[in-house]
Length: 312
Length: 96
Image 1 (cartoon, chains in turn red, blue):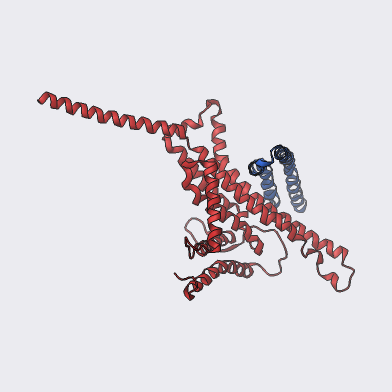
Image 2 (spheres, rainbow over the protein chains, first blue to last red; image 1 turned 90 degrees about the vertical axis):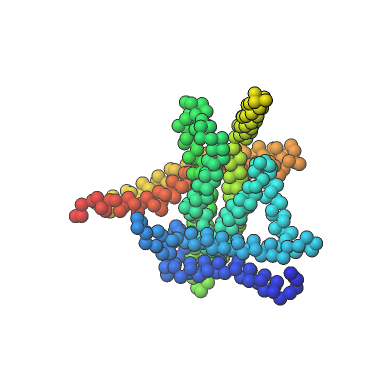
């Protein structure tokens, strides 16, 4: 397709709009559903509405809505970055996404080995989703990663992957891996359950603690400014110290910590999944199976040849 | 009487949260050690800075876990436990 054509530019504009509209929708929803007169406060995810279900009502919270909106936004971002790919004249965005993909592939190959090279898209997804969810707090929105339900869901997904790779050598080997030293069986079971739990707690605790500290500092600055500047007639009514100072904290807690937690979650996923796969035993089993097959084939061949001989 | 009981509940929740965060000492010392050793390693071999830094960040994240468990308990004690306990108290206590 011609890159200077109107259609190309129109599609670009549509994709950028699709990237930004979910964030706007989230802001509008937040403004609509936040009760009037509530200052800065620490609340969990607000329940937007509930869907009646037979057993228990299903609450749809801010965290769920925001995480779906982030997903739509990332989807549009991916489409935008891969729009107009070409070999001869790459656009700037193509170079950016190529750099990112190469980095992630190198990371996966380096820490998981070539057996798991197919994991690169999954790891990239985790990185992007986690980082963008945490960065959502830059818009003043509720970051979905500071809700344990969202991060817990990801951790359960990782746990399922770990269990799948442990099952590669059959259920007997899986059960045997818990009883490595037989005396420590209960501890092994506990540590197996603790893996997803600690992953979820680590991610959610880091993001939530950032939010809590930011709110405490902001309310503290409000009090401080009324104490220090309160005697000035008109200016004293505004919390002037709140301007700018919490932004310095935000650089650490929202930007740095959010991206670091995304990196750590992806890194731990890679380590646990590649650590769960017993590569040597799997190879041994495969070789044994192939040998048995060959032996069977040989024996069948021998039998048939013997029969042929007898007939002759 | 009921007010005193609610006051005791709130106070004990706050005290418990503060005491739970004593666990923050451990990760602090541990991460400090990790970063100190990483700095030493980079000083000895400046060319391995990237690998040392990423390994250190991973180690720090894992060492932080115990502190975060305490943080979760403290947050539960501050934001969740008082409401629940007061509700239980109000349903159990005879209405005078």
